[in-house]
Amino acid sequence: MQNIRKQCSVCAKLLINPIGNPASSFLLVGDFPGYVETIQGVPFAFRNVHNPRDSNKAGDVLKVELTRVGIMMNQVLITNLWQHQKDWKVETTIGAKGKEKKQKVEACPLAFHLDELVRLFEGKTHVLLMGSEVTEALLGIKTERVSGTQVRIAEFSKIHFWVSPNPSLVFNQPIGEWRLALKRFSEDVSKKKN
Image (cartoon, rainbow, N blue to C red; front, side, top):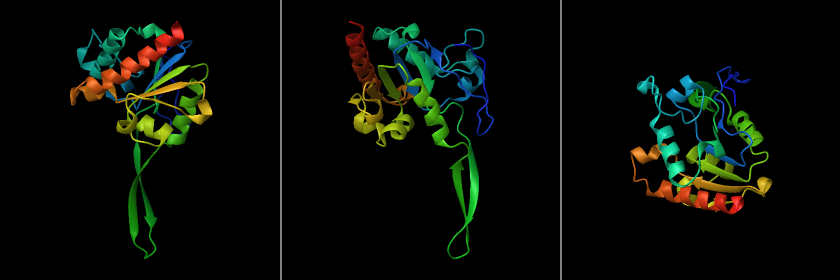
C-alpha cells in the first residue's frame, strides 16, 4: 500500500494507513496509533535503523512474534481501530439544577473509525483483534474475558475472529497470554492455508 496519507473527514487529522499485504486474507487490528506511528504514518511502526528514537518497540515485538509462529509480514494486513491518535475535547452541559457539567469526550467519533475498519473486513477470513479498545468496540466485552479464543460476530459469520492483548503489554506483563493467542490464531490460519 502506498503511504499517501489522507485527512480524517471528521477532524482533519492525518490518517494512519494499513501496512502489509492488502490482498491478504488475514487482518491484524490494534487499538490506536502512538507517537511513532503518527510520525511514520503506519500502524505498529518497526525499528527505524536511521533514527532509533523513531522506533516502536511494540511493532518490533509484533514482527518477531509473528515470525516465531510462522506468519510473515507479507502474509497479513495490519491496521488499527483508530486511524489517527485519539483526541479529546471538553463539552460543557447545564445539569438539571442549572450547574455546569464538564465532560471529556472523543473529538472524533468512534463510529467513523469503525466504519473504516469494517471496510477492511472485505475478503478476510481471519482477523486478530489486538487490544481492549478494538475488542470492546466490536464485541462489547473486555479482552481479558476472551483473550486467546475465537469469537463470532454475527454480521461477519464467515470470518474467524481471534482476540489477544495488545502487543505493547509485553513490556509490563508476562508475554505468555499474548503468545498463546497468537499461536492459536496462527494454527487456525494454517488450517486455511492447507
